Length: 228
Image (cartoon, rainbow, N blue to C red; front, side, top):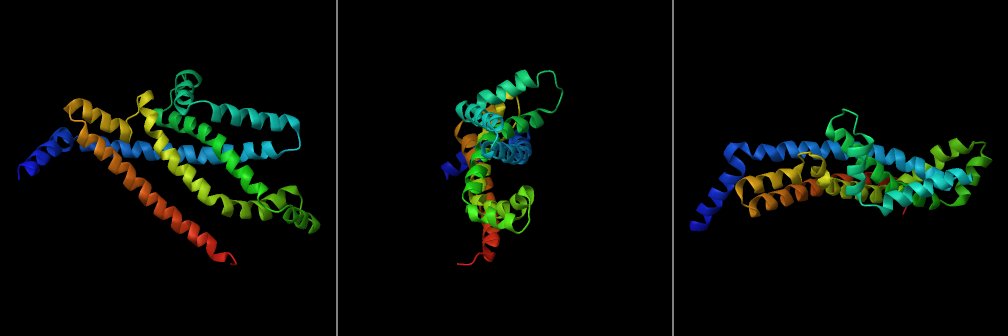
């Protein structure tokens, strides 16, 4: 039973002593907050940029191309630090809001391509059918094209959200105590790397697994109306 006693001592040292487990609780809350803000902002920005990329106007297409090229061509950690230490340097907002905005801007570059591919996947005849029924461009897009496109791209959007949650592990660069930073803090305080790192991995795994199951059920419900 020596291994059990050793495990018990390590567990008590890393998680029970000084209520260190609360660091993970607070880190989990920060991770969820940042991810939700980033998801909402990323979808909004991504949709707008996708419309720019599909626009007939050269200026709008240029804006969309530059945005996606810059966002996808630079590291997310660099974008986070630029937005936090430069763009929002004089704005006294909570760190997690600024981090959420940074990741939302980053996610928007990828979501834009997802939306663009989804819209292009709809047969052009659908647009022509909508116009023949007397619908204008906005009505055709919102009532015919988007509902079908969203159903097609939902799995890819879910994957983007999952990737986004894991990418938020770098928010420690701006001093936020997320799940990863909580594990690093415990590791530094106890000089015991194994237990905090394993705990961090387990928390991320369980979070992603539960989210995958929930999103899978939503996707299954959306597909019930499909005719096979």
